[in-house]
Length: 143
Length: 143
DNA sequence: ATGCGTGCAAAACCTTTGCACGTCA
DNA sequence: TGACGTGCAAAGGTTTTGCACGCAT
Image 1: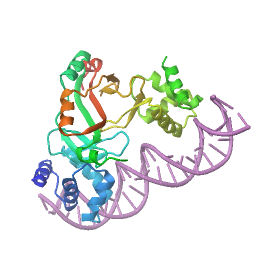
Image 2: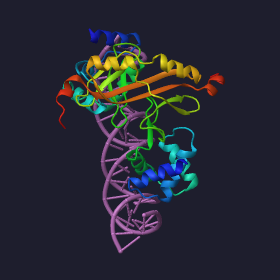
Image 3: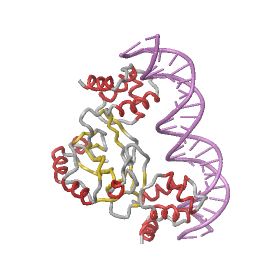
Image 4: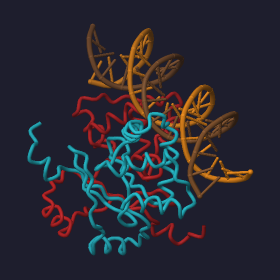
């Protein structure tokens, strides 16, 4: 169960499980796509109208600290977040229409490794985002 | 000459070449790494102390419109910009120490294309950033 | 019981905009 | 000369912070 996974990781890190924290995390679990801070707050307020924006911001830090958060920074749009339950890091196919983000397996291939070797570049981390239209949305595109 | 390339492209697009615009672009040309808006303004002010932040912001729009700007959005840092003289788009090896960003050739390989095909994902654009230490900096790391 | 987490409001930051004036083509 | 570009200051938006209180452990 996703809930348990997340809460256990938070407990391990010494964080408390508060009502607000639960709501904030449930929003991500129930949401099938990455969301902006604005949407996140809105959805959280549906379950608990008192939840404050500063609580969202503070919990972003908490979730990042626990490596539980994916952070996607589109070039021309707001940062969006989703839960990271998969591995250490993920790459995504992000649909420009419905917003769904599907994690995919890694991408650093032989060719890339050769380039890095040639340039003697010591790779620490990387970021790959693929934007387009998913199978479903591709069929309905007319605009 | 880089200056000419850039100014010609701006003229083609119908933009005027003003003193401020020159200074702003020269900063990018003379700078061997991508910089933040803050640094950009600071460096521009060295050549022309009157240059205003809003002029930087407005020229970012202009340069983007003319496809002359690379925009890098590190996950945990400010957006940084560099001139795009290369191709339609570039990917970079970005040094976490000296900040240098070296463009590299593309990355979407057979394996990736197969995944996209399997998932029937219609790829429109993508974004790859590789962070690590460049050859030079790698030798001096002690912290 | 104690200290972490939260709500609230204010502060701090960052980006955009309206207006009057200047300047490039 | 006319339209675009700029400086300035104010507005708008987002994120962070201080403080007092509440709640999870």
